[in-house]
Length: 140
Image (cartoon, rainbow, N blue to C red; front, side, top):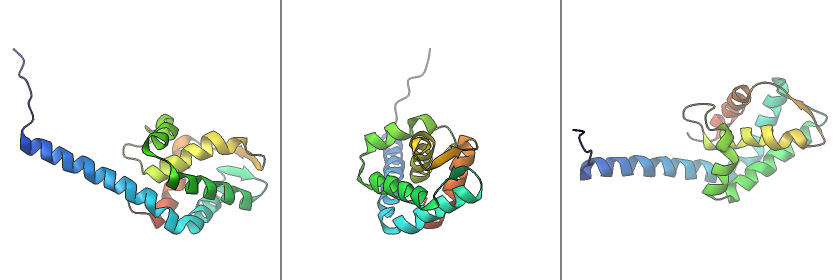
């Protein structure tokens, strides 16, 4: 006969604390985007171009597009963020929400922009490149 698992109050409170701390970290990271919008978008655009992951006719246009997407991220609700990042959740085990959203933007939407010639590299290479720059400005 199978044993029925019933979490105790102690286990439930620990799980609740873990979930609330993760949600707090996510909100803090998304809220922190507003404070460092320009330098972070500049750093991401520069690194993508330097590493040859994005080929563009204008680096300034690339930076403006990333800046607009990060600005939009600060105004989005959780459902919209999860919807945008859903295809890329499995790139890494514990992704940074801002890096994941920016990666999804670069791969899905930026490819159609008129100043972008092409995007090279795998999804994980683009994520790691973006995450290096995001980690300099935002907490995990």
